[in-house]
Image (cartoon, rainbow, N blue to C red; front, side, top):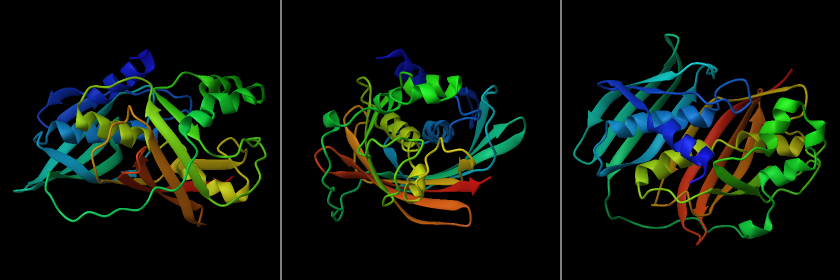
Length: 286
């Protein structure tokens, strides 16, 4: 396992402080604040720690309340709201310096048989034919400030390959607000379904709300805009592995009031719909 992936797995493992209290370290990805996917993954990890192992998360709803400080650890306070005969509910509050910065509600369920249907996976080029994020930005890295330049081409725990046209990220052509991102952990991971779920929660926040910028010819590095996640929602439908290729199909049905809405579907390479996602983000012109 690569060091960056091993570091991420350890980052999401958490330290138990007391009954229902856990502590996670913060990682600086160069944005100046804690990456939202980190808090999302750690909060789900905290919830998993208090849930019977035969129950798996099937949905989560989360709100980002305040920016996280990358120089401080985060404490996760888990409220065991309900333990039913087949469903378990947990609420998690992430705290820094005595103030909540994030909250999450998650529901877990015993495996049960039932009706089956799903959306069809759209046609997509194979991941091997798509450039990595680092390859895309390497061509333009000299135009980025040094801290962003380092992050844009740095080694990552996940391989991300978008089917977006290879436009100049500083002046892209407007196009319909749709995006497809192939993603996969860079090495084989343990056979732990919970680990794969909170790693997918972590990586699902990459290249997500920025889909709402596409029809306006704007990217995350365009000057004059403030971008931040407001909430994040996920539904887990079927088993999957994040160390095998997954396709995150994202569209943005609306942007208004300085907010952009995105929703997504995650498919395994064989076309199985394994998860659904949604997020609203702040897209504010400064």
